Length: 287
Image 1 (cartoon, rainbow, N blue to C red):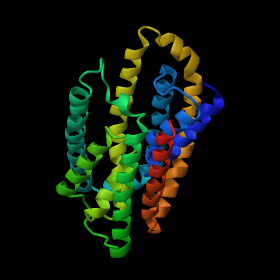
Image 2: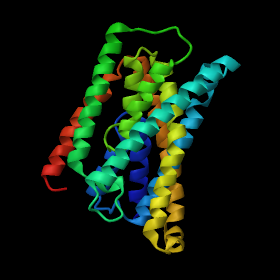
Image 3: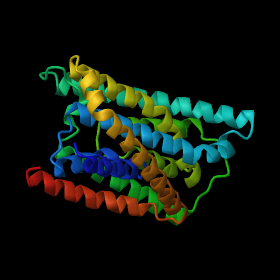
Image 4: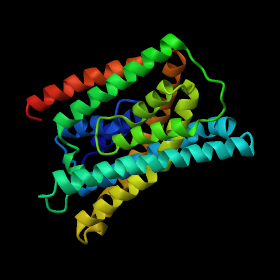
């Protein structure tokens, strides 16, 4: 893997992870176009580090906003924490059930089946991108027309359940953008757009460490005692990739916030629909 490949993947991951356009779909397409092997241990190590870089970008960008939105009083923090826990629990219920069902039923004849074995299926990615695009488009246009901005300082339990459940749908399906789906669900449930963004990325910080741990465990299982060799050959480039992903992530978050504030959220939905068509073309072209 060349340094140029690492930088390209880091920028793609950093931008697409935090914009509502699905980083996994874009990273997989980039890997295929660069003729990289997504299943290679060094690629998995790089992706683990890229996810780490974007997680720190989220924390750096949102920390001040979270303090103002959720930490003004003990009551505000309690309400935020309850909503965060409720949403995370329902993410685990929905996402866990879907992943378990796919691995145990659809992949029952595959040895050592992981849901990740389906992640490079471009036909599935195109369908998920289209679904995300439709959801973002609907929520963006609805919010643009209504301009409904609830004055309620807290996210209700019902709203948290919906956001968490929809986030659970994103776990097994590459292309179904997590940030796009959760922010859109928040908008459709009446949460103010900036509060929906704050809550969506707070959920991301909760969700990312388990996702990184799962990828790291899958990496360890695939190495069969060759961890030292992979770490020696890929750790420095992976750290550099994390730095580029961090910088790209900050740029992406500034872009996302700007478009939310300017009522251009629905444009991300249009992009996802166009991207779905491109991915479908690549699938039929044999990639």
